[in-house]
Figure: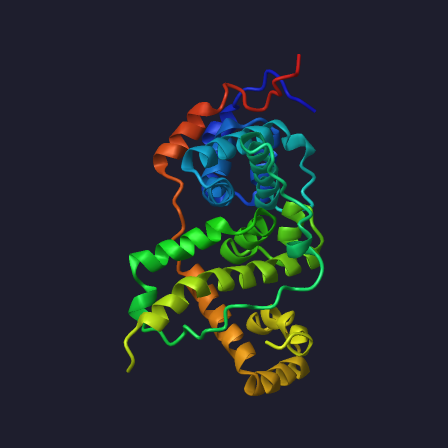
Length: 216
Length: 84
């Protein structure tokens, strides 16, 4: 239900945000407390931004997604039932917002139902050169870091959000499933395929490096 | 990786790396890895891939972006734009 005419209360001004648990923060958000909005942003915007950035690939677009996410969340806070955590719910809104934006930016963008990535047998590895023998310094160069970053950015969209939430943000399988409206089994499958996809992609770069390295 | 023989293990590699595989599965998989160089390379490079990904720095949500977000909040962010 939409609210109207709500103003920040004096109690909200006096509130000490450091003492809040999530329930208390939610109560204040539901009561229309603007200071609670700032607190919610402080707590959750960095992670929401990281998901948005990995989804959109551009800082400006990611910022727009974050903004839309929090505005939508605050307006719909009465509909938040608390079955998942607030952070998980925000990820869910951000993911949907990012998908809608991607569809607008790329009308031919098809984010779901790529049978090669989501269903059927796991593709067998093709890159089988062992590049683990490279000296550590080769993994720590700026170029190597850029390769890894580019590989994550290039993950097929159907795998990317699962990978970001599960692998990079450390959500559990169940939280990721809740945030992305997937089954736990689908999360496990997509995470596994994302890992294998990245391994394949990075093997291209690091195998070349290992082959070019002088013997000894 | 010889197809059907290795495919069974391929699907278990994430559980293995996450230490979520059962003891018996882990023992069987390790037996296979000892005999299959291709699967061993796959596991080792997969482990290294994850290590590199985890070493990526986390892109920061800058204080400027935070300020822009706070400024973008309408006077009453709890009012739906379509509400009367």
